Length: 252
Length: 256
Image (cartoon, rainbow over all chains, first blue to last red; front, top):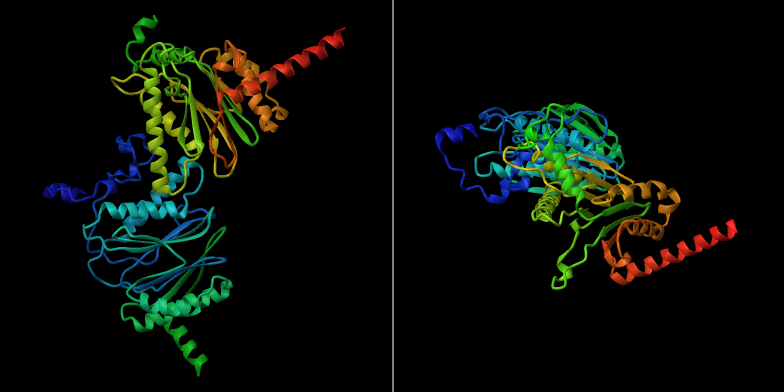
C-alpha cells in the first residue's frame, strides 16, 4: 500500500500465513499463483459511497461468479434446487466506506486470468477463497466489506459469504447489510430447498420489501437476479413501495 | 563454434541453439530408462533400476515419487555426475508444495496438466536466468484428473511439455519409443494387465538381466499408487516369456 509505505508503517502485524497463499518461497515469480497478493496496483480510495449491486465477472454466458457488496442496505442470497437467487435494494448510504468496486474488479481480473491460464472457469469456492485471502491481507486496516459470492460450477450452485475479517462461509442462505436481520426473518419463514423459481422470486422479493420497510437505511427498488446453470438472468427491478402496497392489499 | 556460445545459459548461438539446454538434454540421455503408458483405466510407470552396490540400502533408491495423492512422477536420473538426482529432488519438492498450495487456495486437487505446467514453467525459468543452469532432468508425470481421465505428460530441461499416450525417457529412450509405437494399440491398453505387460516388455528391450532391474508402479482410477514388488514383476516377466515362446512356436509351426 502506497500510503503505508510513505508513512513508514510496519507490516509486521500481518500473520505470515496470510501472505504465503502463493505457496512457494519464490512467491509470484512463476506468474502462476500470485493472485495479486503482494502488489495491488491501486491505492485504496477512502470515503466513497458504497456502490450498488455488482454482477457479471468474465462477461460470458455460462457459469458466472457474481459478487455483491453492500453496507447500509439490505442484500440477500439463497441457494435452492434451481440455482441461486440474489436480491438487493438500491439505497446507497453515505459514510466512510472503502469503495467495494475496487475489490470486485480485482477479483474479476483474477478470475479471468484463471480462466485464461487453466482453460476452465474458476470454481465458486476458489473465487471466494481469493477474495477472502485478499481481505486477510488487509486485516486490521479498516476495510469494511460484507459480500456474497454466488455461482454455478462443477459442484452445482455455490454460495459463499466473505467479509472484511476474512471470514468465509458456505451456506444455503445469507443476508448482509443493515437490514439483514429483517430479511433473515422473512426468508427463514418461507425457505425450502425445493422451491419453484416463481416461489423463490416471491420469497426474495418479500424479504427485501419487509426489510427495507423496517430498516431506515434501505429502500428504493428490489433488484433480483437468478443464477442458473447456464448463466444469470435479471429477474426484475421493482419499486419497494409498490410491492408493499400490493402485500397490504392482499392481506386485507 | 559451439564452444563460443555454450558458456552461459543465457546466450543464443547464431543458429538459434541454447547449448546449455541441449547439454542438459544430453545429461538426461545418460540416465536410466523410464517408460510411461496411458491405458484406458490405468497408467503404468516403469523404470530401469541400476544395480545397487553391495553395501547400499536398496530402499533409499526410489525413482518413482508421489507428488500428491493421485499424481505421480518418474524421472530419468543421471547417476554418474552428482547433482542431477539432486535436481530432481528439488523439483519434486517444489511441485509437492505447489500441489498443497493449490489445494489450499482453490479447494480442489491439482490437475495433472496444471502441475506439469508448473514444473515446466519452473524449468523454463532456469533456462532464462543469470547464473543458474537448467535442471538436468526430464520427467514423466502421470495421474488421473477429477473427471477420471488418465493422463501422461513429459517435460524436458528446456521447459516444454506435451501429453503422450506412451513415452520413454533416458538412455535408449529412442529404442523403447519405437517399440511402443509398434506395439501400442487400442487393444493393448484396453485391458489393465495388457498395459502393464506392454510397459514391462518395452523395458525388457533395453534392460539387462530382466525383471530384477525393473521398478514398476501403476495407478488405477480411484485407487492409490501401487508399487509392484519384485515377486509380482517376476510373475509378469514369466508370463511374458511364456507368451513369447508360444508366439514363436506358432510361427515355427506356420513356417514348417
